[in-house]
Image 1: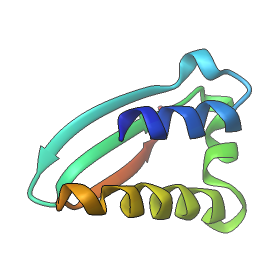
Image 2: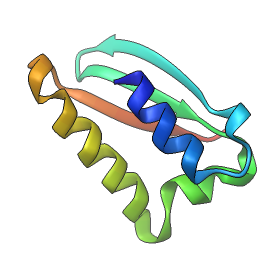
Image 3: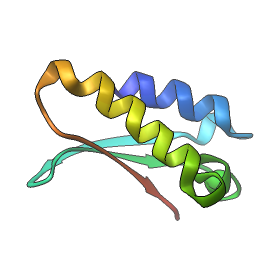
Image 4: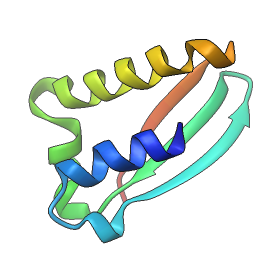
Length: 77
């Protein structure tokens, strides 16, 4: 799952070397925190959050096999 998020995020941004993903498990489920270069945050979120929503949809669809709830958080620094 982490690799899927990384590949999608790196394709969207201008600074693919700055893509970082941290995995945490909490009460909500498995949380992937995506951190990108400050100038690329808008590219990952997209207009009105469309790209972020699409990313979350793809990841949650791929996570159906794991039977765990998966959440993608975009962290801006």
